[in-house]
Length: 409
Length: 197
Image 1 (cartoon, rainbow over the protein chains, first blue to last red):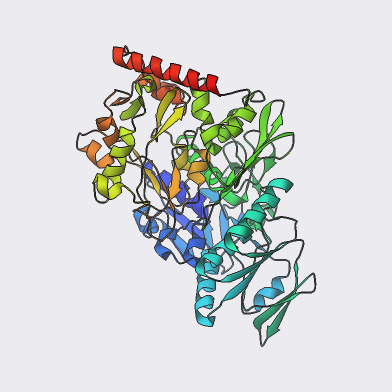
Image 2 (image 1 turned 90 degrees about the vertical axis):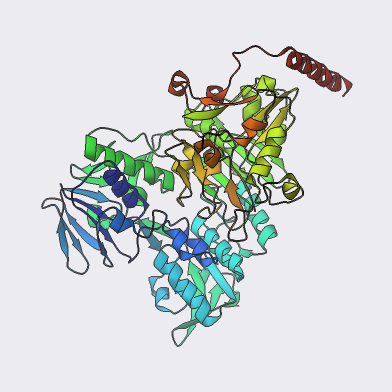
């Protein structure tokens, strides 16, 4: 049986590794847009912050050799012919498959793609982006940068470049950064703390309206409030869209069944996969590493043994990069809020029917694992949640286990 | 596979485990080197909860949520000892592991293992090298009251929830009389302090 992966990202790498470790000896071909071994997108900003490139190769630089894979790199897959079991690349190459693992990931979405033609404007999604930005900063002795878009990737970019020593302006449309993974009050708290801790100039309720280029080289940007900022480097991190066109014909992702099968011969996984949420049951793209891993493992198991089913995705996430100020979030921010705050720490849990519907833990990771388990298991916690959030010395898990949670707190 | 089990009722909160762990993991392997060094790494901590005490460390779960959450390849399992090992050279301190650890067993700081001038995640490594040579973890060796025990995990326990702390609790054996007395005195002292507030 010939297995082909579309994508060489984390899901594909895990899938292939699992197949080989579980004794799969037939041909495996991996198709990727970029000319690199599988790398960790979560790690690549650290390369820009000054850490060694080799640490991005989370499964080793020799991945393709070690797992006896034929890599076909450098040109994207543009079409999947599900009738003939063929994939076609932009360079005209075709490949047949018996089973296809479709994990093509997502790409940066640009409000004005034309901006990218200007030297000095970059996306912040791929290792290719990172290598180009790194070279550009070194060649042009860049001292300051504008980051447009303050979602997860934008904040990650701003912090990585700040850590490298650049002066950063972060321009964001909303009234707080990380607006998708925070509620209003928590997000405003987190934004204020990030500014206090880093000195990054965050411009809220503002967008980049136009860029000023001289001979094709970025020299300044103009903001929606009329300000003009001189800069030779701008990172655009407005959003991402899944690379699902070759398979589904649109950019809404690829839905699969409980075995992650989008078609009897095609598994879909990772940032392109539409899956059900493990707690709410709502379908969506839950683009985090643990979900991608679990999907890859289920698919590998199903391919080899014909059993296993995916229990659903969880939308937990944490941003703690380059500074020790974590922002943890999961679920959805509706229901009855229960909040606790002390100094740099801010915690809020949303309850629906006495169970955790969503939560935000800012400034500290302690008790976040406990809250995560309570959220996953959907236990009733209405009577004790205040005591859990506010336990002195952040030891509520152990207090509860010893039967010493102070419910009057 | 052997694991560290806890009989918290025997814990006298002497913090001998913390001290032994600090020495074991300090490059000097020496108390005076570890003292006053803010890079000193202590992978076990004694929680004081009212009149009870509890030594907290990584339980080396299987499956381990932290390992499944780590996106940088820094966390792996030693097939020989079953220990969940965190390699600081690959760790980016992104907190994905800490976010899901039910035991709060993973912390962050600049340790002697830090390579890039920033904090890394650190946690109990089960004293893996010692254990594989037939030894015991330093905290267990240091524990004189029997609160920490390194022993084979009973398969019937393993069938139960891996992530529940109760899986790792001991308490079948009788309490030594002096420990009983100590517990009683400690309980009274805490009650007295509460009453005085």
